[in-house]
Amino acid sequence: MPICIVAGAFVLVARLWLTWVLTAYAVLFGVNLRQAWAHRERSLTNDLVLVA
Image (tube, rainbow, N blue to C red; front, side, top):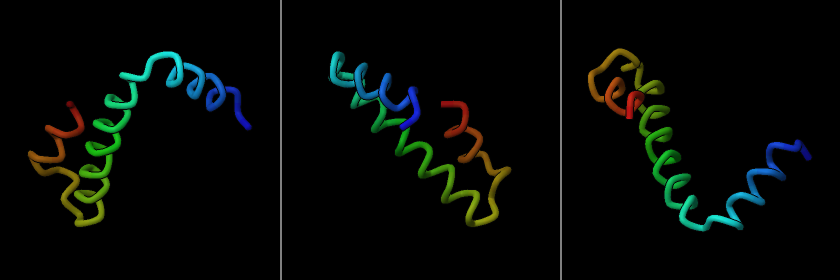
């Protein structure tokens, strides 16, 4: 198991509020993937999600 996963799990256990941050980034990443899958990589929505 990579050291970054172990360290990240330790940080998530120590600071539980970071799970909300992780969830928000996962949702934004999902929107970005959906835009890319629909071949709209250069759309304004995708740009805003990428910057956020």
